[in-house]
Length: 464
Ligand SMILES: *Cc1c(COP(=O)(O)O)cnc(C)c1O
Image (cartoon, rainbow, N blue to C red; front, side):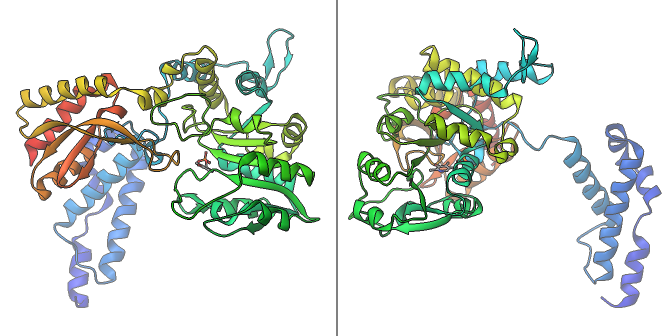
């Protein structure tokens, strides 16, 4: 573009006042105070001006470009970005979809304290300051048989444990367990951030007890075992059994810490989650401290749990960083309600466990009902087939749970267009695609979402 052309384009830019007078502005002004709208419009016009000056050609009518951009920005600040979705992917603990959904009692408990004052740190019996630990600590102790602390998440739990017990010293970890936990974060970096030196032992596929004992020295502060929860090693692999490692650590008079990741509180046996080591089993094996997540298999809110030896738990409790990593009242309300479901033997009220446990015969009935609803709405090519769900969420990698699916087949293009429409619809529906078929897994869809799912699928199929 030559400078005359650029000048002409700049002259064609609407003024802030012109934009505010246009019909497009009416809804914006109904949603937000005028001065906020003015500043959004001003920002959009100035961005566009800069693009024009740098020689970028506007991809259409400038008035329309400005009003579309402002509409987008108004929506960004007036519409919630975080929304509920229908998870028809069959991945129960989908980290990108918020991991475990809370049960009804947990949601009620959150709502009950969210808009009111509560006794978060107030002792109602004695009328004096209470402890926030008292809401979940005793419950966890009753369930696990050991004192426990709650922090922001499992990463925070590991960080805090290592910071308290191994700062300025060494942590022994098997080379095969230095995993990446997701979003580019690695266990190794968390350990280093807590000022411990990581001493890798063994090799990637095999680590022997001897590797640990040879590495234990004057500066060794703890032995860490990380549950390989989001990947699985197959073939020529091996690592010491937990009791052997515990014995070795104790002979050297250092604590043995285990990051279990998933936080299985149930003793099972559970179809689908047989591979998950329960927290109590590790404690019984003599592990000094166990850390796990609250929102994986435990089925509660995002939280990290540290449990084990009383003296170590107390030391960690006194670390100043505990204050920085503590949880709020909403988390405690949700976690407390979830733990009470366990305490009452009502694991069926924990949605993640209920989903993992749903039987093929019940899922078949639900799938047949959905397929019927789809047929009624004119969706051809919907079938009920056998398939698999996944536990996900860094729990029991590749642990597949036999399931039943509703599949919608079509050309590759059609199926991918349907998937896209479902994802961007209201409510958004997340489905899997496999071999040019759309897979809908009802294991992760609650009963009360079935109607909305059928309607969304019918709309999406209709539109392509
Ligand atoms: C998931 C996981 C973590 C991280 O837990 P967050 O609660 O997400 O912080 C750490 N270690 C293991 C083994 C895990 O599976």
